[in-house]
Length: 127
Image (cartoon, rainbow, N blue to C red; front, side, top):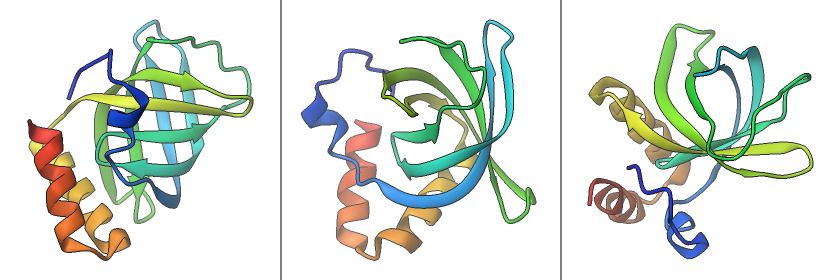
């Protein structure tokens, strides 16, 4: 999953699912932001509203905990900052464990509603 030089066309191979959730951001530099607003997710990353006081920049590394079901389920991923807009941060996932990718795949499957498209995206993710 870690290809920092992906083109914008390649990044768009993964459907973005609007998703109302919260996430914790913990930078490898020690910056911590709790309960950040998630805007959308994909099999390859996550888009989050910039939290107050955020100091990150492009290619910074973060551990992200996506909190689901009132924090009963947590999807954990390592990610880098891939793009920054006026009020959002786009992260590309660089590592995710098997349990988390299983939950993420199921979440995307439920919200995408197209099993064939999900299969194509998952195949692209692992190649």
